[in-house]
Image (cartoon, rainbow, N blue to C red; front, side, top):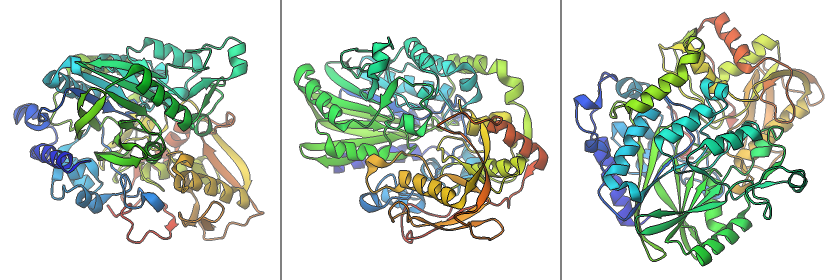
Length: 589
């Protein structure tokens, strides 16, 4: 980012930071000022891209605590997104701004949440998007959705993502890509994509040859592409190419059984070929990749693929308030990310002319629900979507004195509850829970409802299991997941967090090679895990085959109903982490 662009970012963030901080989170923006007082950006350029990603079906405003641990090593040490807490505030020059501290970090989280309330909400996002379009020019503005939109709530699961398709249409999304969208059946994905007003793109999903031979549908039978790879959009007098990049490890990280005919991959070579062809034949003024690779994978793609102006990324849920510059053989590609759960909107204003981006302004706008009035049509749509399920959604299961959150490299209090539930209900020695990054935050003093529980568990393969596993296998599981997270080569990172554990402690050295990161595995009673000894292990969310047990939300609800209350001192397991002293990707919150 140029110095001018960086100053522009600081100016606009300071403008938003001037918004009042209320002692009462129910105080509305309409009582204190106008929307444009906090969200009006200085006019710049001739094309505007608005980008959201990883909303995980959160139609209503939510609480969402940013991580205290987001470690980066090797070439990504101390670089976005691997900066948290005070280091984050210092890096971006926004120290002392309470609004932005609340938006971007976990610092003073409970205090800020009590004062400023929830974030996101599709009714608020609709108001903000409409304002950003109208103030710039509708014909010069595009809204991009980076995926993970059709999954993450009870209503999304029950409607198979259709509720979110309707919300996206009402929001006015122009282009979309996917990841958790592909955890529904292929026929459901195709039906939803057809019902979507936006173009659903992917240059890296192909239909298998035998499936094509047997009549499986494809966007293009000659190439085998399952979906349209790119689109050219006219934005005022400019022409902009948008290329779709789906999550490349979908059939590894998620079950292939629902989409057996499709293959996924990073496909950097085909991306380069596609960019070259677009530049040569379509002659656009700008080339944008709408990606669900994950931040570090996007940075490496920006290094190895030339000719891309911006990568608008998602998957790793990183709220990074700058367009990060990555040098390659032929110039610079900028990488952007828009956080998760509807908490942010990326706004990228481009000055483009004659096949070139001359300059740009980038802003990551936090969506503070107390500053933005709800769009009436979207509010009604959300109420109608939730109405058939209200009895279940509003059912109170337990209460909590502590903040319940998920996001973080190693554990979260919500994950601990799920792990403890698996051990308690299943009578297991050890429990394992996936390192999912989706899931909202619950504040102290709130009831835990089934709606809250479903934000942590609502997915198409929630079945639980109990199996005997020897110590060697348990260690191998931890080593494998750790490599997905900390591999030196970003193209081998899958973008999740470390598997969560119950009844088990361990030491990890993230900078070592696979097979040598995990040591000192012990049961909760302090006994060392023995390689050849069998242990009773409970878990959920199996990728290879369907597990025999009940859905994890039933297991967790049983546990919560039994204990009734989460105390402030509820124990959350955490591994001993080696080699992280001074690392700006870890802090105490």
